[in-house]
Image (cartoon, rainbow, N blue to C red):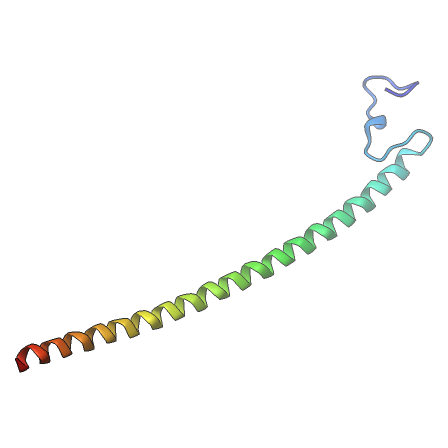
Length: 91
């Protein structure tokens, strides 16, 4: 507790407060710092949202490719079964 302050006074706990500086100046400095932090956080949020969109797009593309590959596999299996049936009936 700074000299001259009582336990119930909280001004000395104000973030950025230094002895000899008015509390209003400390609060305005803290407000400026909060604004800077908010801008940084918003920038991080924007970047993360862009990454999420990119990952979502990649997942959709992978799903489309998997669907196409599965279709080709089923077609090849069907053709193989037909070829086996023809081979069996030719014997």
